[in-house]
Amino acid sequence: MSIEAFIKRLCKSDTVVYWASPSEESDGSFGFDAGAEITCFWKEETEVFTDANGKEMISNAMVYVEQDLDEQGMIFHGALTDLTAGQIADPKTVQAAYEIKKFIKLESMYQTGEYKRTAMI
Figure 1 (cartoon, helix red, strand yellow):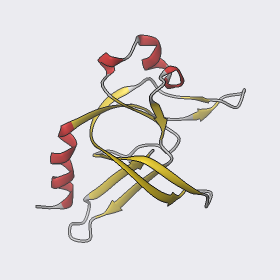
Figure 2 (spheres, rainbow, N blue to C red; figure 1 turned 180 degrees about the horizontal axis):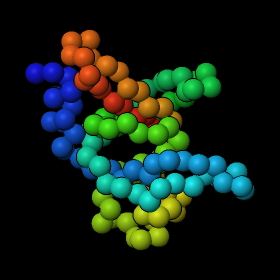
Figure 3 (tube, helix red, strand yellow; figure 1 turned 30 degrees about the horizontal axis):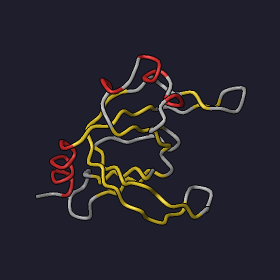
Figure 4 (tube, rainbow, N blue to C red; figure 1 turned 45 degrees about the horizontal axis):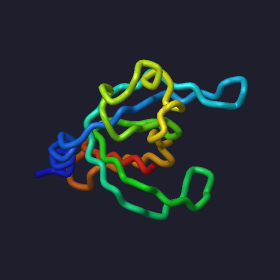
């Protein structure tokens, strides 16, 4: 079984709401696309990593997904039905929404075009 097939099977086990396309607003805050539900495999795991600016950070969880995600996008461990319409529109109103601090996309050593995608929050 390829790593991508294994990740796809794992990713059917959980759900997150993902807010993509973080863009800086005139007041310095970020705006996002409306939340969308995606499948994933959420693993509570603390890991030290280096962000895009070379700063050491600690993740609270690793989220394995089947699609590319935006760094600085937001993610909530749950479903759209767990949120109000206002929360779906604005992740900053969701207390348990986390910023994606780092997104890693690694191509399989064994199968061209297959990837392991991990969001660190």
